[in-house]
Amino acid sequence: MILQDLTTTCAAALDATDALMASLLEAMREVLGGAPAAGAAKGGAARTGTGGAAQNDATQGGMATEGKPTATRPDAASTLQREQARAHGFAWASTYARALREMLGWAQRLQAAGRLGELESLLLQAAYAEYLAQLAGGLPMSQGEMFRADSLDTDGTALARFNADPAVRLLRSRGFDGPARARIAALVADGRATRSFGDPGLDDPALYEIREQFARYADDHAADAHRWHLENALIPDAVIAQLAELGVFGLTVPEDWGGLGLGKTAMCVVTEELSRGYIGLGSLGTRSEIAAELIRANGTPEQRERLLPGIASGAILPTASFTEPDVGSDLASLKTRAELVTRADGSRAWRINGNKTWTTHGARSDLMTLLVRTETAERGNRGLSMLLVPKPRGSDANPFPAPGMSGGEIEVLGYRGMKEYEIAFDNFETPENALLGGEAGQGFRQLMRTFESARIQTAARAVGVAQNAFELGLAYSLSRMQFGQPLIAFPRVADKLAWMAVETMIARQLTLYAAREKDGHRRCDLEAGMAKLLAARVAWANADNAVQVHGGNGYAQEYPISRVLVDARILNVFEGAAEIQANIVARALL
Image 1 (cartoon, rainbow, N blue to C red):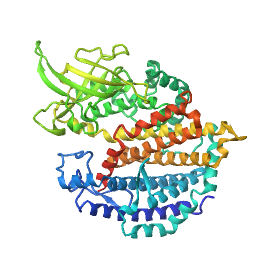
Image 2 (cartoon, rainbow, N blue to C red):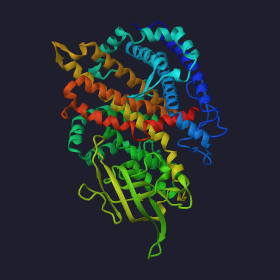
Image 3 (cartoon, rainbow, N blue to C red):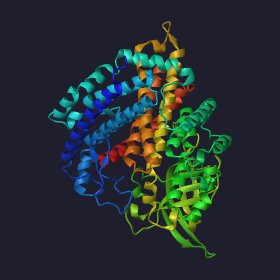
Image 4 (cartoon, helix red, strand yellow):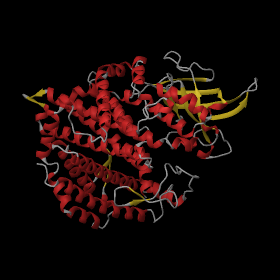
């Protein structure tokens, strides 16, 4: 059942995949007229995405992460927009190629350590079998959008070579056939009691200990989490205090500032396990991660000294407030204004007017990272600044008890536990030293420097949600009897569970790869974007399939899978919608 010389066969298939991707890259560039995609930095050093095709140093959202904003060519921008379907499809195909590379690397590391077992081998060959088939025949960008490689390989030459490759043919025909699917389902069923669903391949024994610690914590709060969701209640202060004691809010904050000084890989391990219990638990640290990275990378010495220890300890709960009622992904168009004024006592303050929306954990927070327009003479993102705004904690009855600040809750389907808010600022004032780094007009650039970490963390949340959905579906399939048999005895149920196990591991390995790149101080906007893009889709697919396994009960609110479904849906929307994410990946590659 396990293919002979599996890792060698996968390596050969990966070579064939690299050749296909190189041909598709050339074709995509020809479609765009030979010009770099709008937003690509000129003269950037080549980077390798799939291991075969080179990629240009690229920007996020049209601005370089270092140096001056890059001029964009209107013709290239309009061509990329017109060709979005193919460009985004190419981004997805490249994400698949990178995911396959990371799955092979994972298996090779396990093999070298003597830990490549039967389940891990089957997960590897299944991942290759299915993703190779989708690369050849069509892969889903969403439920209703397919990318087919022949839309770029119009003469069929590259696809013919790919389909004729012996390793590709072998993996596609036998890697995830009926017996392989049945065996994976049987192995994960046998491993349910000990949560043995495949070795994650962590490179530090301490990470396994951290994983077990937070897995226990998530399991201990799983039942409470569903109640919090049904009641639309805030996660209790006592739970926040416990997470603070465990170091969740200062995981990656340096020890000099009171944090644990761990890397992004550890952050992913913790985030995945907490999110497996409840996305709200895994998301409590998100705003702390963003705020701490903003301040650590851009803050003045006084701001670091004043704020980082409190964030790391959990004494200061931050919130991020960027989005506006008419401004979502297009942050450069935001309108909320901050003007530096002199008060009657001679002190200086920022006076803020405007509206923000989708502010998570806005009422219970102590500090707001607020993106505003301070340079009215500058258009676009150059006029934006980041303010570190202290605020009093609110309550459900009075969410924003500060003069000049008002707002209310946005009722949502899922992703509860912290609550979402819209906020209005009417001559709200905050001290002059709230300006991040003490320099106006740098807010967009400062925020962009956090995108890599934020998207890696969100990918880890998605992996946790995907794992939760899989485990809920598996448990139900083993306990629910129909026609005298457990549901898992029916092949189409078992097949769903098998693929959920496979694709969750794929998303995990891609996310851990991005985290390792970040920990190595290497630029990883492309890798983080790929991880977030794929993991969010996997979370939604797993949740949807797990509801199907539950049948009608999956639609009943008493069953936790109903919560997981609505929680999973947000992952394709926030921290870069799937379409925006695909655009970022495409620009980086092209």
